[in-house]
Image (tube, helix red, strand yellow):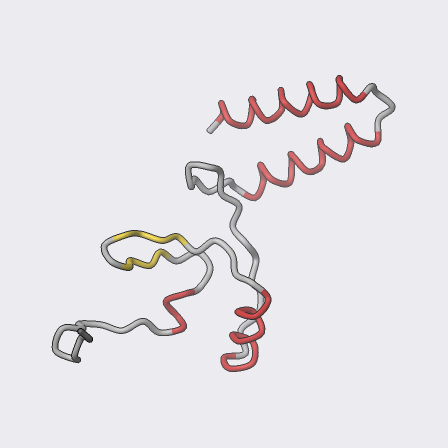
Length: 104
């Protein structure tokens, strides 16, 4: 059985599916943190929209701030370029991740 216009109270528009927005479908919340290349091309072609910077989230769905991501990336590449044993490298990465997790 299909729904008629009477049962449907509101429709979605392309603006509802922007990165960083939350969409409710069947009483479930969906946070949009990234999109694929097809979606980027569609928004650029039909709306002239660019700048699809993904939002980094952890396993629980919490947003990771940009400065934390930048700091981690810089530390990761610094440790990778340093001449240390692989086991120490992974231990340091684990400690850094643990500190970031505990700070938030």
